[in-house]
Structures are given as C-alpha cells and as structure tokens.
Length: 103
Image 1 (cartoon, rainbow, N blue to C red):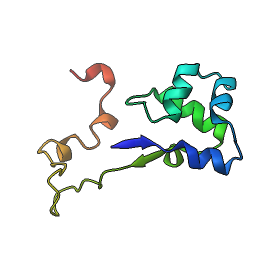
Image 2 (image 1 turned 180 degrees about the horizontal axis):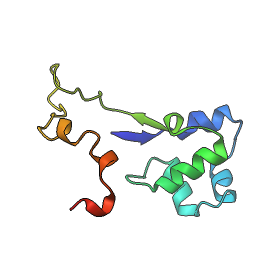
Image 3 (image 1 turned 180 degrees about the vertical axis):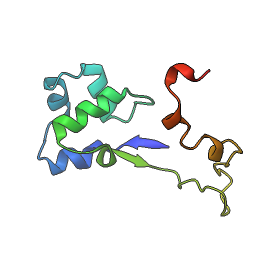
C-alpha cells in the first residue's frame, strides 16, 4: 500500500506550517487537511505533480510503500504477479501498430 509521507519533506524544506503552505499554494483547505492528517485514501495525480513542483521533490520522496514488494515468478510471496502467456507476444506490439489499428 502506498501512503503519503509529507512531514519529512516539509521538515527538510524548513516549512513550519504545512497547512498554511498548502492552502497558499492553491490546495483547498479540506484537501490540505486530509493530506496532512493521513485521511486521504485516494488522490489525484495532479496533486502529486503539484506537491512535487512546490516542494521541489520527486514522487519517491512523497510516497512510501508499506507492504513488501511483490515478486515476479519466484520466491515465497503469496502476492506474486503472475506472468501470462500474452506478455512475450505483446512485447513491442505498440511499436508496430497504431492505436487506430488495435481493436
């Protein structure tokens, strides 16, 4: 699961009042409150983009994965991403076909 990890970024940037900072940057007050109090279960990619721009950071600095990484084909994880028979056949397909030709 991905969670927002904003406090360390604000601290590193010397931002003492994150709520005021977000509101002055154009975030609605309820969105700023939810972002800062971990009440956000979904968020717009435009918010991540805007946060990265105003905080001069990358999404990797804002998001933290709280579950172990899933493994592909191997290991002991119960949440494995399974390889399908279509993967190798579709590799490079987009390079040879226009969007209009895909049905």
